[in-house]
Each structure stands twice: as structure tokens, then as C-alpha cells.
Length: 246
Ligand code: PXP
Image 1 (cartoon, rainbow, N blue to C red):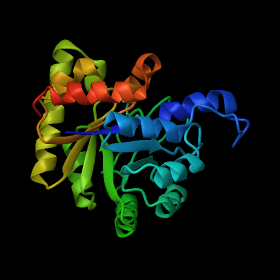
Image 2 (image 1 turned 135 degrees about the vertical axis):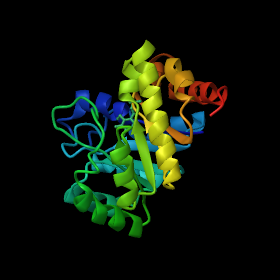
Image 3 (image 1 turned 180 degrees about the horizontal axis):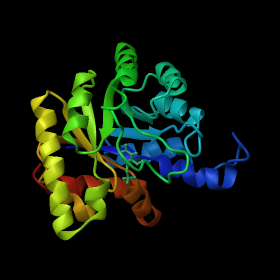
Image 4 (image 1 turned 90 degrees about the vertical axis):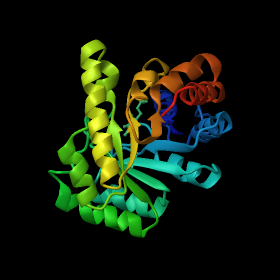
């Protein structure tokens, strides 16, 4: 099981103080230092979300991580012409297409691939031709899985937010939905990742979902890093993941 470490919150913290002072010599914390700490902790890739409103990650952050950190880079982005152009220049190893609404605190729901298929198909093709493998961040829904395969995406990331936010019977239902979506995706030849709200406390339930090959985790790692540092937080997560059978 691979671990992608999302470091958006490091930029969120920096912007809380320095948003009005772009490039300030004293701005902290450093996004590239965070990526390096994640690398030292055993991260398999670095994820960052460059939002249209640049509320946390800035273009320069993505470029610096691409240049300085010897790990695969996964760029999360909205499916817009401007972001496509940005990704074509950055040439990340992976691009994860996500829905984006200005007011949301974080990515709230999956991308409507089925409803936007004709718009997304050329975008996926352009990114693939430029050397980036593309995944669709979708809800565990058969229509969205089929649409992702139909437009030529090689990978999906299943949205685990509802799974994470529920307990008991409701969580069991979400595990079943995730498992059904993962089975369908696998049968269609898609690589299956998962992300959003994953924490040490819900890993064991998530391990019941078949065919997962990568988890993308951000918030809980940065929260833990406040107390033990990011390298240690990533090490702990890698250990927790490797204790389970996937
Ligand atoms: N995957 C995607 C597509 C996301 O948008 C996010 C949140 O930024 C994550 C994974 C990570 O979620 P979390 O921060 O809850 O671990």
C-alpha cells in the first residue's frame, strides 16, 4: 500500500500569516521542507492542491517541490483550462482531478465525471500525452466509476469522506459502497486509490475495501505533526498501514 502525503495544510498555515506578503523572506513554514520531512518519514509521493483561488498552495510551491523533492508529485486541481495549462507546464507525475467550490473548506464531494464526460475526456488525454497519469476523485458510485473508465482515466481516487464521518451501521454501509466501487473499477482495469478523512482510527475498517493500492492522507498527518513532527507522523502512519493486510 502506497502512502501519498498531502501537505496543503502547511501552506494554509503559512498563508494565515503571510498571504499578503508573497515571497516574503521570513515566511514560514516551508512547503519544500515539509515535503522533505515527509520523504524522510517514508512518503511514497507528495500531494498538493493548487486551487484556482490560490488560497493555500501557490504556483511557486508546486514548482519548488517538483524541482527539489525526489518523489513523485501528485497535483490535485480543478478541471479548468487555466489549471490544465498550469499542469502542462509543471508536468507532475500524477494529476488528480477534483471538484472545486470557492466556499468549501476542503474538497467536499466527488467529481461528477458522468455529467462532465465530454469536457473531461480531452483534458485527460492532454495530460496523459504530456506524461501525467490522471485520476478522478469520485464518490463510490458505479456510474462515476464507469464514466471514469469510459473517458480514459487510468486511475480513480475514491472519496472516503462519508466513510470517515460515520460510525456503526452507517460506516458499514459506506465500506460496502467503497468495496463495490473498487471491485467494479478493478474489473474495468482502473487503479484504485482512496482519500479524505483517513485516520489511524479508521484504517482497519478501510482495509476491508479490496484492490486499494494507495491512500492519500493530509489532515491527520499535519495534526499529528504539531506534536511529533512530520517525519515521525508519516513514519507512524506507514507503520499503522503496514500492520494491516490490504
Ligand atoms: N484526496 C483528495 C482528492 C483531497 O481533496 C484531500 C483533501 O485535500 C485528500 C485526499 C486528503 O484528505 P485529508 O486531508 O482529509 O486526509
